[in-house]
Image 1 (cartoon, rainbow, N blue to C red):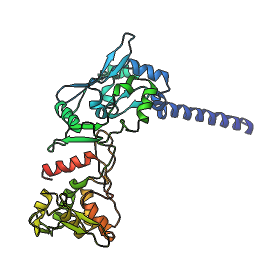
Image 2 (tube, helix red, strand yellow; image 1 turned 90 degrees about the vertical axis):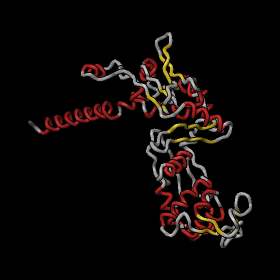
Image 3 (tube, one colour; image 1 turned 30 degrees about the horizontal axis):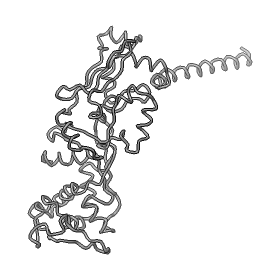
Length: 353
């Protein structure tokens, strides 16, 4: 073969290899992205007709289900409206899937999509039917949590300390998932633009100063250090001047927490004594508080079906800023936590560690 023919053969081979590589990429790597793209009309039609299993509470209340329309398509409905919106999320051809609808999508959706893969899967004994998903949430507790929260912005999380099962998870303000499942794009965009942020799951996706509940972490740091026991006496002050500052920390009622002389660590925690814990935080130092906070889950990832943002505890050397350290020991300043993080902390105490 002369040189010109060899070059032509090499060029043809390279073109075939490039074509094979491109075809393999678009089929095997990018295929799922093209399939699930909301702009793909075939994907939207496939979602509209494919069966999808229900979502139920622990006590059998249906909170998400699919209803068949006269034209053969199916629409996702949420009988309890906003009550479970931040748990179930929504399944939408336009806006995508969120919440349990997204986390358990493979279980909920039917695998019978008419493809050769589905046929072969069924032939070899695979189950193509959609499955139901049962939550750990109890309907009575979910309603009680929502009623207790009322019109306040915030969240409620209730756990079973022995198992970690989420018994209630409410975030307010909420939204009707049906609006995003079957409503118009304009309705969904209006929810996203609402300054009240109804789409924000405040139980998992927002952090707040934990306040006095953080004193549990400070108490754990004191006990872990070995120099304190529940009976260790702490000074009982009605106000604590912060060193190098004009700021003063006072107790909730402006008075003493006990007899005005001293009180035990156990009693200080029971009555949530601000002055005692501010002084204790400064005595323990930033490193001890940081280690106790990280042991309690701060700055880490919580393994959960739904995404949870980390609860940050400042890693800097607060020992150089004692007023900041005292405020941090009271759950203020820079420390922040999700409601789920603080529910886990309470559950750890209830479960003896």
